[in-house]
Image 1 (cartoon, rainbow over the protein chains, first blue to last red):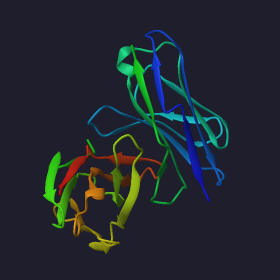
Image 2: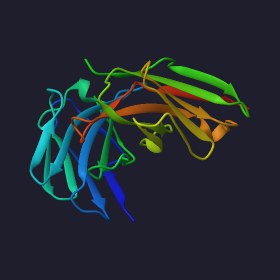
Image 3: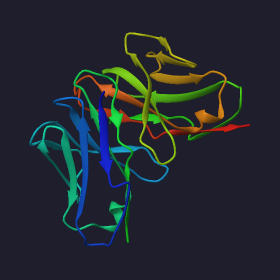
Length: 112
Length: 113
């Protein structure tokens, strides 16, 4: 069976510090991978998606970047966090052509 | 622009009643639509989907209706239970970009005992 792991679950970081959130998928190959951000009480905002190793598409201009160094690994990064980067970050995967996306448990990031 | 939105941000129902959550979409080219449930502090979970060539699809206690004429989607939950309390999102798949889902804002469903 397929599983998705996302860590850490919570994170408190000072403004200006770097960020690295990691997401890994098990039990499948060549998944489409996604990073979303969800502000409190709001919907999902797609940040990045990747269809293969080294292939990253950015949806919105922002202070964040993403990388996919391995087929089932997706990393969300920032060199210097802003207060506005606070939120609930979700990683997800989906097979091309399938309707269902599978989400990780999320990382709640608070920038102070 | 293309968007998927929800008519009601919050919905409160009595346990045992039926719930109806509505969603409007604007992209006629979307080829399928999906409903997700998100419990507090967790990632969204897939509930049910419907292809654009269908009008209705039923699952366990849930029914999704699609009205392409008015670009409206609804999720009906029968005999709502306390465990159904969550935020419900509709999403549409842009047929021109199979890698992306366009998400609605979400409706919070509260089930009163």
